[in-house]
Structures are given as C-alpha cells and as structure tokens.
Image 1 (spheres, helix red, strand yellow):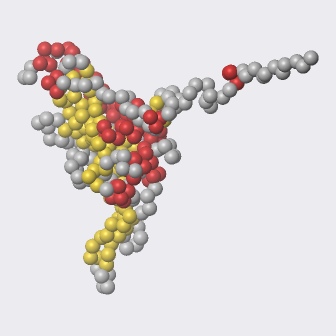
Image 2 (cartoon, one colour; image 1 turned 135 degrees about the vertical axis):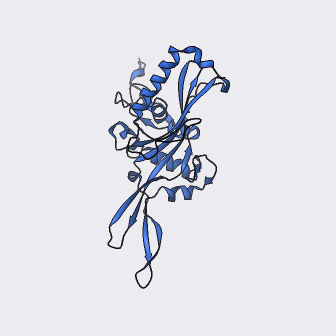
Image 3 (tube, helix red, strand yellow; image 1 turned 180 degrees about the vertical axis):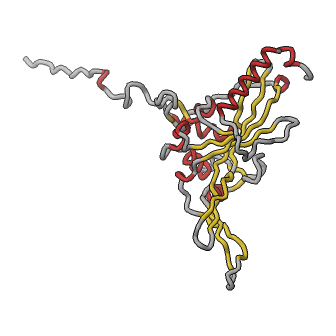
Length: 272
C-alpha cells in the first residue's frame, strides 16, 4: 500500500518580508507636513532675521554627511529640474536662474588679476574652480518671526535658504586673500522642504536615524549666528558686526518677548 507523501510545512515567520525588524520607511514617498494655518489678521509681526549655519560646528555636522549632505541634495534636485534656484542679486526670489547657472554659482571662485605688457594691472577676472560639495560649509537662512495672537505663540518660518561660497583674490606673488562669503543663489524654502523630507538623517539629540532633514529644520535642531535683522520701523542693523547674536541668544530674546506679552496681555490688541 502506497503511503501519501506529506508536504513540508512552511514556517511563516521564517519567510523574509523585509530586511529589519520593522519595515523601512520609503523616504522617496515622504512629503513635508503642512504648517498650521495662520490668519493674517491675527499676526503681530515681530521681526525678520538672516542667520548663518556653519556645518563645521559640531551641532550642524549632520548637514554635511557625505552623499546625504544638504548641498548634494540641493544640487541634485536643481539639476533634475525639481528645485528652482533664484539669483543671488537679492533674496526676494525675483529672478530664476538655469540649472547650469546654479551649478556654476556654487563653485568656488578666485579673482585673477590681468596685466598688460608693462606689468600694469588692467582688471580682475573671476575664475571658477571645480565643484566640490565639501567646500560648501555655510548656509544663510531668511526667517520670519511673528506672534500669532489666536494660538498665543511665537511662530518661526524659514522663507529662504542660500548656500554660501567663498571668494578669494590672487596676487602677483601667488598669495591669496579671502574676501568673505556670498550667497551662490537663493532657494524658496517651502519648495525645498519637499527635497529635505526625503533625506533620512540622525537625530542630533539621540543619534538615531529617526527624522528627516525637513524635521531637523522645522524642529530647529541646528545652531546659527544672526548676521542681520529687520523690524518694522527699524534700521536693519546687526549685519557683519563683531557682536553678532548666536541662535541661542535670539531664542532667549524671543522667550523674554513672549513672557512680556503674557505679563501684559491687554497690550496684544492695542493699536490693531
């Protein structure tokens, strides 16, 4: 009598479904979460600030991780037509530039003097070096800070971001001099957020890969230094001064401002 052959029983939990204890999030499908809507009638404008982020600061090192750095993501998105770059002539997003112009503007440049046959300098010509993402170590953000009366809190919204490039000049003895930094181009931050939301970075507070670069900016897990500020009726001082505020000092100012508002709540509606 022929006996039936038993079929092997598959053990379900030994069949690999994904590599890891939990499914890996596909960051290519991630989109930034929207900011809370604010009624313009409830805004009490406070100030606009420009701040510099230095990736050489250990608090900002996460922005310069090779292959997932901020500048790598920016240049890739620009070259693929996913991100629009605007001229550095102003930070009002008025003039678009082409991807080629964007790539050229982020390359380091040197001012090379041009001489006549008698050795007299006629002019200086800017020469571009090859693009090296490791050379982009600083960024400038433009941010609006205002008080939302309805929600009773101070809001901070980054409006623009610009990579900063170093400008140097070369003299006849082949010595060079740094002339400072200048924005390569400006990016509209609400558009940039869609690029940042797809970049997985370690949480600076925990060291875990549990947040996106967009989360890092929205939660303000970076260090800055204020280079300029503007208030309605103000003069727009604190630009390129020796006594620039750090981001933490600015935070303290905002906390003091908020405390003053709550000590005198009737002043919130005055004059509006």
